[in-house]
Length: 102
Length: 190
Image (cartoon, rainbow over all chains, first blue to last red; front, side):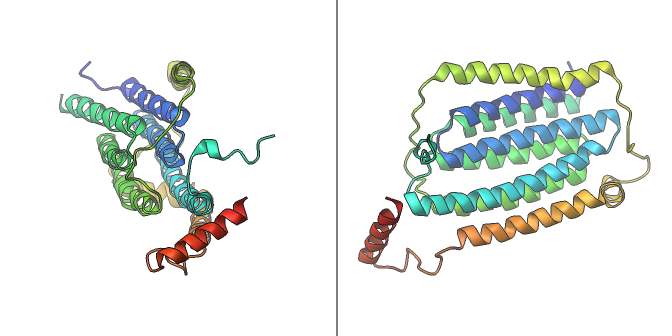
């Protein structure tokens, strides 16, 4: 209990990841959906750092860096698309994007 | 002892902040709660002796990503509550629980088998930042350059997408002009 091991961190990672998944599944507003994806990426980063520390390997931290870079570029492109969509339609509701519905 | 106290405190705070982010109906609360959660996550990186990663977490997430979201939120109407209609609540929680169990299984599988051996072992006597530099510029040089190109293309696409029609500013236009522009937009969409 008092000795913090790898499984503590992995359980924390899983809890945060499931919070993010619940957010992805229940949000209908696209901006809030982006927040939930950020939570997913961050929880995985904790897992990578913990495994890197307890195995004594550096690869986990490197992958965490690349995930941060991917998250930053995802935010830039996603927000740009979101602003264009908001200028055209006036709302960012996920249910309104049904123009490709078959 | 102190590590355990810090771990439990910060995990409680992180889970609380991210729960607020997911559950609240105010976009502004969600943004601030997520910024706080990002700061608390960097504490885990410092505990795991990944100092450079923790610093990068604070700089990139709470410095750059949060500022980007804050500027993006200025375009959207965030003062009113976000209305979301949810048809089936149960399926969300059932799916979330199932995926969480699956993730636990995926995470525990390599640890149980103990087949992992360190590819780039952490060396004694070197700081975290030096080792990050050594590994990043020798073994991961090509992914590093690819990440640089990816960030550059993301920056250009962000400018091109968000900067479109920036020359007619909504704050400097009269009300009639804005109405005319909105009518023209509706015509284009319909």
